[in-house]
Image: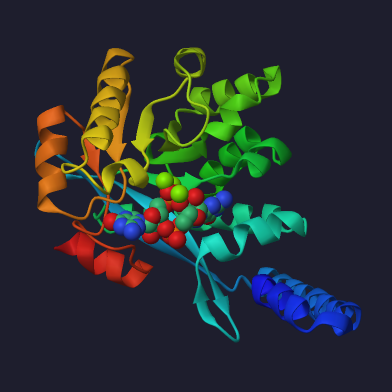
Length: 283
Ligand code: C2E
Ligand code: MG
Ligand code: MG
Ligand code: MG
């Protein structure tokens, strides 16, 4: 919309100034409106978690479930995280959302365990900002205590941007999380500033190979080379690999051949709400 507004302003020549002022006011109002809706959503927990299964390539068994947040937006229906996580961060509203996600994921997994479903971990995403702002280890310890979930059934997914801040703080927090018995995965691996040194220095368990490298295998030689290299490197560092966004049988075949451990993607299942996930787990 900003592009369209800019083009319109250029096209209409002289009236630019006026047009601009008006369109900027409108967008500021929209930001305020969205912020108000988001605050309401936080007050009422108007979020839901969807869960996407992760499957072991060796034996086809369930290895984990990733929790993915959605906002029950009063005007737009279910809104995905790409549309509000960054916005929430910019308005200083990410912390309560992230806390809700962590608690809800642990509560739900414990409920499934009590029903004899899901003997696998749930993975929760934490943005770099959340990781810096929150006392993640203490919060996790409290949530595990409160929900009764055993620590080996929780994993956190962090992007490489977390590791780039090479502060003692980052290292301490990661070690504290690890000491609890909680797993640590690097999400979207290969899209940030990957470095063997980070992987060696930090107590990481899994690399999640970004979907952008998986999409065009086995056809694109470059992507095949990249995925091969990531899997080999992960193996020699004793890290597990998860391929993200797997959609085809051809991808599964190559990933199996390369020794990838786990796949996640539409070929297995799309992210499902808690009820659908429960039924899926029963089958
Ligand atoms: P992500 O952690 O890399 O999650 C995978 C994303 O890929 C999900 O999008 C999922 O629906 C999508 N996906 C899974 N399989 C396939 C596939 O086969 N093909 C395609 N095209 N897409 C697939 P989603 O749910 O929209 O989440 C987007 C991103 O938002 C996530 O990427 C994650 O970075 C972030 N996110 C999600 N939940 C949370 C959360 O609770 N907190 C934070 N901080 N970030 C979250
Ligand atoms: Mg993730
Ligand atoms: Mg990812
Ligand atoms: Mg992503």
